[in-house]
Each structure stands twice: as structure tokens, then as C-alpha cells.
Image (cartoon, rainbow, N blue to C red; front, side, top):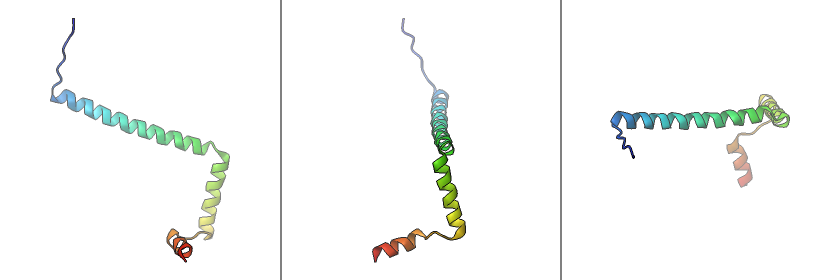
Length: 72
């Protein structure tokens, strides 16, 4: 015997809100996994630290300046 279920407006709204929240949780989990991957990679972390040191020491160029130099 087949049972037919009807969804009212509140049911549809709840389903839509749940889907949106699940999509957001999925996105956040993907970002968290990427962060864990980066933090677990010693070479990548060294490169990040080196880059931050370069910024503090002024050994960087603004993208706009670099592009102007390349255009010449």
C-alpha cells in the first residue's frame, strides 16, 4: 500500500532551510579540511612564514607595480 504525504508551506520552508544549512556545513567542513592540510604540511608552513617575513622586511612589490614593470 502506497502512502501519499503532502507537505505544507512550513514543511517546504523547513526542508529548504535544512538544505541551506547542510550546504553551509559542507562548505565549512571543506574549508576546515583545507586548513588542516595546510597546517600539516611543514614545507607549506615554512613558505607561509617566509612570506610573512618578506612582507615585514619590505621585500615585496605591489601587484600593480609588478604588472606595470612587466608591461614595459
